[in-house]
Amino acid sequence: VEFVKLAATYSKVNLGQGFPDFPAPDFLTEAFTRALGGGNHMLHQYTRAFGHPPLVKVLAQFFEKLLGRDLDPMTNVMVTVGAYHALFCCFQALVDEGDEVIIIEPFFDCYESMVKMAGGTPVFVPLRPNPPKDGKLMTSADWQLDPAELASKFSERTKAIVLNSPNNPLGKVFSRGELGLIAELCVKHDVLCISDEVYEWLVYDGKRHIRIASLQGMWERTVIIGSAGKTFSATGWKVGWVVGPDRLLQHLRTVHQNSVYHCATIAQEAVAQGFQRELMLYGKPESYFVQLPKELQQKRDWLVQSLDGVGMKPIIPEGTYFLVADISQFKSDVPDVPNSDEPYDYRFAKWMVKNKGLAAIPLSAFYSKAHKNNYTNFIRFCFAKEEATLKAANDILQKWKQEKTSS
Ligand code: PMP
Image (cartoon, rainbow, N blue to C red):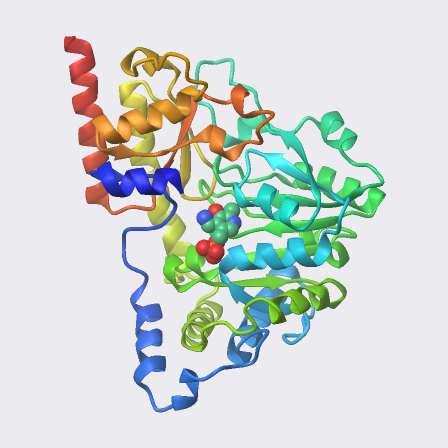
C-alpha cells in the first residue's frame, strides 16, 4: 500500500505493482462490450451465486483437459472476486484456531495476514539461493527448498501448505521433483494444499507448469486458484476461480455466500467467452495462452539486459511477470538514515522512486518479520509493460550509470 502510493506520487516509470500497462486482448474486451450492449438484459442482473453457469461450465471443460479428470462445474468450480477473494475463502473455510499453515518464502504478502485472520499460525520455510559457481546470472531455479527443513515444518497441527507456482515475486516455476516432495509430505501428514496458480500461463524458455493436483494423492487435498486478471491481462475485472474437490469447495461456498455472495455477471460472461475461444485454439499459435508468454519472455529479456548493463544483477525468472534484482552494488547511492531500522531495500526503493522516478518493490516485503532482515539486497520489478515503458526504464538506468561513472 505504501509503495503503490509512492509510485503514484513520484514515479515516471512504474515497474512496481503487478499489472500490465498494455491493453487486454480485443477478443476479451469485445466479449465484454457484446455482453453489455447485446440483447440479453439479464446479464445486468445477479447470476448464480457460486459462478455464472457459462463460466463454471467452460472452466470445468478447460480444467478437465489440464488435469485429465472429469469435473462437475457446479461442485468442482467456484467463481470469486479475483484470486484474492479465492484465497480469502480458502483460509476462512479451511483454517481454524490453532491450525498451522506452511508458507514458502518469499510469498505473496496477503497469505500471512489471511492465515492470521482465520486464527491460524503461519509457519515459514524459505527458498534458499544457491548462486551458480560459473559467474553466470542466477535464475529463479537457483532458489530451492531444503528438503529436510521443509519436512521439519510439518507437524500434527499442520492444516495446509500454500504453494505458489509460478511464484510471485521470484518467478520460480517449481519442478516435478520439488512438487513431488511437497505432495509426499502432504499425503504423509494429511495436509491440504492451497495452490495459487494465477501465473499458470506465464512460463518461459519452453518450461512447463505442472499442477500439483495432478500428482498422486493430491486431487482430494488441493484447491487450485486462478485469475482472469493475470490470464487475460485484465486485473481490474477481478474475476477469479477455485477448482477442487467438492469436500473442500463446499466449505468455501459457505464463506463465499456470507462474504460477497455474487460476482459481477458481465465480467464473468466475457471471461467465459474468452475461455471458449482458448478452448477452441488450445495449443495453437493463435491462442492467447501461447502468445502472451512469448511476448512477455521478450520483455523479460529486455529488462534483464537493462538491469545487467548497470550492475543491478537480475535473477532470471522462469515464469510470472516479475523479476527480482540484486541491488547490493548500489549501497553508496542511497544516503544512510541515522537511527533508522528501515531495511536497505525499503530505503533503496523509496530513494529510487523519489530521485530517479523509477518504482519497484522491496523484496523483504515478501518475507515474514523474523526473516526480513536476511533478504534486504533485492527489489522486484514488474515487466508486463509496453515496450515504451521498458525503454523509458532503460533510459533512467543508463543515465544513472553515466552519472555514477562520471562522479
Ligand atoms: N496470487 C498472487 C500470487 C498474485 O500475485 C495476485 C495478484 N498480484 C493474486 C493472487 C490476486 O489476484 P487477483 O488480482 O485475481 O485478485
